[in-house]
Image 1: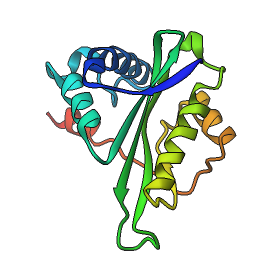
Image 2: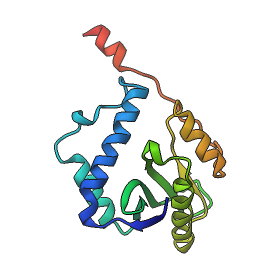
Image 3: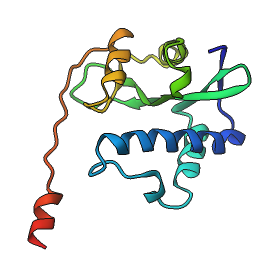
Image 4: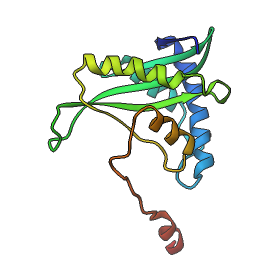
Length: 165
């Protein structure tokens, strides 16, 4: 990875294409939970990325190899819940690096840039979610200093509904 830069409005179509790759990957993990990219409403990805780029509480970074965009990093600052001891927390919302560019430090560099911004915003902690069956993602985040602190669980109800229909 040779550099990282802030995304601009003109980058929405690039982000949309990369995000479709993320969605396709999650769909392979569990097609009953994660929708395929072609199941999203028309314009969903473009609208999402345009809103994130314009948001004062988000930063979208593009990861580049030479001039080619090979990934993205979406960081957000959110208000903490009343039960937490700090007012704001950083959230690593979406991260993606194309397969052929992984293992070259892109995620680490993206996290360093996001962490610098989080510190400027007086953020006390950084949270992220990773799909429980995404072994590569879990390993990368652990290597970067993250550790599990909450286990999010689900119970599938749609199977029961389908059986009753």
